Image 1 (spheres, rainbow, N blue to C red):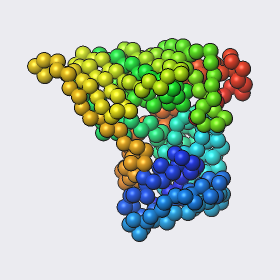
Image 2: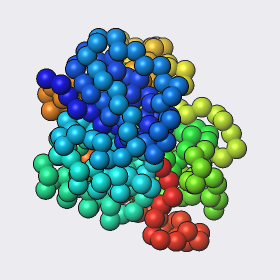
Image 3: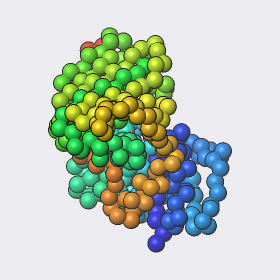
Image 4: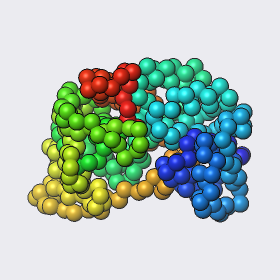
Length: 320
């Protein structure tokens, strides 16, 4: 079978997805959509298995009538429009959305309804669920009855990356009832690294099943690395993601301090396997759209209120 693949948005992140999926042995035609027709001019393309065709397009009219798998890798502000254009032109079977999903609350419900109407299965790329290091940690934490999680660091992008942290907490706790209880933000809105988008600083806290409390903090004007601390009744875990290390104390006669490797692969090393799981089994380790939509709205709605209070109009959240 020749799979028809579409990547919508081939900027830095879209290229990382592309770098990964071209390593698959599946036979594919890969359509790369972007308004900049030269975006792939410097892409090092090598058809290793002689069974792929790579096509750069600047119009949805150039897409096939059936797309087996689409990746939405562009920024959040245009994603609803691109989704509408794609489903109007093609029959789409499976979708992988990048986060943050959308900037407006109504888009979450609208896209969710369309996915159901068209029987499209969709997932959101909160990639820690795909990683073996967190998969193995989840197995260890299944025996825990109580859990508290704190995640803290400097300048890591609270607005655009909190969904990763909340998704991780729900995944590790095995819950489906994550709630944000408090958002305490500094009265500062700064420009994001991505032009046209904004960032904020402060703390988000809540609870998720057996995780009775979680706290996610981003500090301003410091590049102190992000640290994940998980306290449970079966052990203590401190994860230094940037160093790919974990320190843990788990009872093995005594509570000895152990250092372990905690390897977090790049996106360019993961999308291939996400795509193959979805195409060949119809399933994925990643978060399904409905679940991620619920988690997004837990912090998107309070953020919109914060931005509105600070002069941002249109009831939207200028993040991606």
